[in-house]
Image (cartoon, rainbow, N blue to C red; front, top):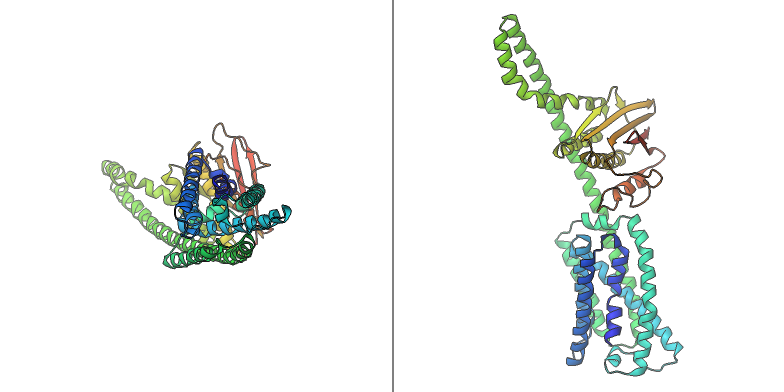
Length: 438
């Protein structure tokens, strides 16, 4: 019974560890396994000691709590987001176990109803059938975990779970979800294997649909809210930048007029003192406005605001982001949000690399022809790092330790025939080009 509970109790853990294996550490795995083993010991002892208590309190609730807490720790996300996932996996586990158990019962021509309490009572036939079901289900779970891993990476599930936010209504809905599942299995765990198979089918379908709905709804709201917030922030930053630029022009004129007065009066000592005391201290602000004055030639406020935001973010990492726009660039009839997301990812990668090399990123925006604009981002490749251009567009490619490369793969997912991204390396410099056709 202990072996049965230990193996089947670890199915959800095994699936999650395989599905999100990039996040797994030895310490977390050891703690997780230890908790599952401890729960199996306590559940076996409690089942014998208090036979009148529904099995769900020993065999489902503790496992749901352990797997929820450990998986949320694994992915650095809210436990509330992982609870529906863990409940769905528990339902799928019971569905697989029930179906395989029915087949095992047919294979050995058993007439035993195959109750869980029979295993506690050491009924040899029930033990054999249950163990066959558990052992056969194990490789199925492993294969499902491996298949799920590819899908989880492709949709950046870990990234979504880390970014998603929860509110009060989410707590109420998920806890109701949890309560219904527990209540259903208060009765179902006392049924025969055939009855549990039917219950597992209903539970898997029902809670699978509810879980998918919750995740899709949350993902939709997350993307909409994030995009609106980003555009709002970019527009606010651009408005502030334009105001600073206006003040710069006004201050620049005043500086010239004041210096002209000293020159007209042939007051060289006064001019020198004025220059040292007033002009030089303000030179940093004046230089910053001069560096970004080219943004006024880009007729796309959301992109201009995003570049200005990245300029400020780069400065905090002591990276100099230079922007060159020598001619008016007008972009029409293009998906602006996609351009913002692609450029934002490219700039984030460039700034991160520059922070580990020469602290410089160069951005050039120009017209290739009347219908095509090109955004070029150049940064130095950090020392002792190599980039395989053949692999760079593949999912999870990254040169940064501890990162999964979802930024680069999300860029590839956003590209279309209208928005194309090209990469090349020249003389130790990494060059990324976004070609926009409008």
